[in-house]
Length: 399
Ligand SMILES: Nc1nc2c(ncn2[C@@H]2O[C@H](COP(=O)(O)OP(=O)(O)OP(=O)(O)O)[C@@H](O)[C@H]2O)c(=O)[nH]1
Ligand SMILES: [K+]
Ligand SMILES: [Mg+2]
Image (cartoon, rainbow, N blue to C red; front, side, top):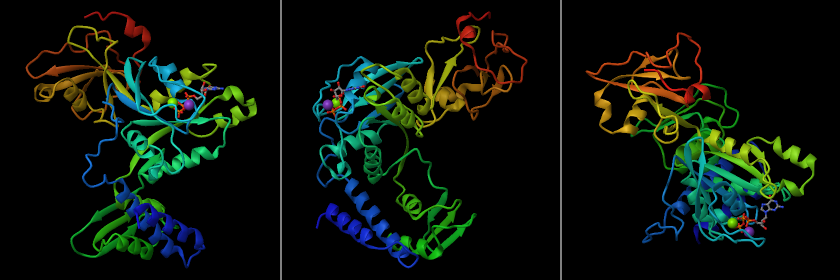
């Protein structure tokens, strides 16, 4: 029996089993069995190079966004509108057969947008080119799930399930469960809060299913069995997802209003070019990019050419900033001067661990080098963090 048949069989058993206190342990075990099989399914088949049939696109720019959705929801139309790169759009399903990259220029950053073939129910198990598409989604920084506003809302749940089946967790944070395997000592099970979903016995059974007999488990929140399994599996990817309801030109205003109010959702129309600016702003915001303007001593920063950091990729500390400029720079840095929202006063003398924020201005002061003491344009005695205003950006620095 293949892995997919095994999963189907266990799913059928779960569906047959009534949910109550008596069956809770058995159901938990079945969930763990399915999770193990799904992980097996993700491993590339023996002998394959793991290459994805032309789906690999080189990463480019400061971040990557994947367009995921059912066929004919308007993914290609959207890519063409936002990037200017043409991607064939048509009224028939599966018009797009491969991964088509485009570039969005936004707020002095470059974002790689990927158009992909439509996916359908069963994608996670390999229907259509579902697995390749989902692999690309996993390689992205955020997902835009494109939905047809005039179609069933069930599509959103179906796609979410498909993505969850391969270990993606959308708009969730990792469960607050500390888990560490040990060599000896048995299982130590503790919690800092009252638990309503999982007890010691259930936890033991799940661990037993994974053949783990020595471990430390500490629940820091009232987590579920699924959360525990996610932590044990350890291969989950937590991603932001924006639900993009397209084609609002063909539905009534009441429906538009209802969809727009759903969490993490935005309504657009490619045909009427409605709300595309809001979509871009939202996408950019969710990516959590941090633009840092480098200020050479005695000169003004170049406000068109930021160093772009991201909390997802690498981090946003002064050290990350320095490493971004040059990998050997760090050993010469004495401290840095920071202007912007992360600074308590202007300029603030900061060390390598200081966390930078979007639009901060940074001047590196090297060892044995004289600083300009903040005599620049940004000198301020205010303690209130303030953004470098657009006006300040345009005005020349007097140094
Ligand atoms: N009414 C309406 N139709 C749209 C809109 N956006 C796209 N379409 C139409 O929807 C159809 C499908 O568009 P595509 O861009 O090919 O959709 P896709 O998601 O890329 O489709 P596949 O590549 O086949 O998965 C085309 O006929 C588009 O003209 C919109 O905002 N409103
Ligand atoms: K299409
Ligand atoms: Mg397409």
